[in-house]
Length: 224
Image (cartoon, rainbow, N blue to C red; front, side, top):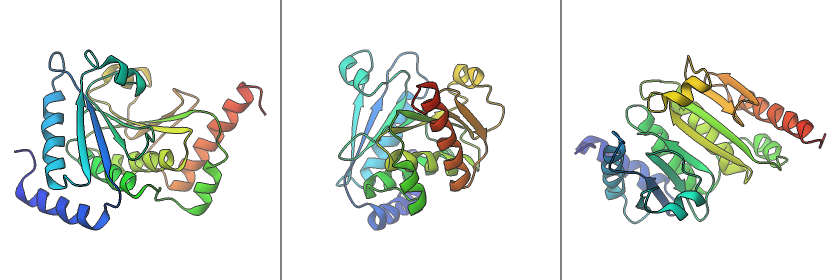
């Protein structure tokens, strides 16, 4: 058992108070060449057991279920998709253990509510985005500031159909961490390097980086 009785009781309390609409978790996993896939599957199964009415789990293999893996743009395992009545572009790459378990739980709660936990101004600003933007947040399971940055990115994805949030466990995806020169976490990389910053920034600062990256992309596309 990965989730002890105390954790299950806490989860039951959170889910009974916070969950509104059903949430679907899709885990992309494989048995060979993935050390954390089985643990991720066990963890999610235990999580679903706490609130089976509202949370559903489907497990896929990128090798066998190629069509669905392509549909969700799955490149690595384990990857968890958190979706509601549609795909909001929220992905977690790695095992959401340690402090990152909070990120998973909060992601489920926000998707269940079908609305972001952001200020009206931020939501209004994000409505102007009309080109695909990916917010990649590098995290580690022992980083106290990482859940905050990850959850902000998830909320941004909930607020805009053009924004996706990719939470990446840096220690499990060391090639990506190396590629984007991740020295400290959380590190946020927008559209694979158009803009990047480090630290759990307040919502307003986070928004500033996203809008700045958006304007830069528009200029590059000749839309300015």
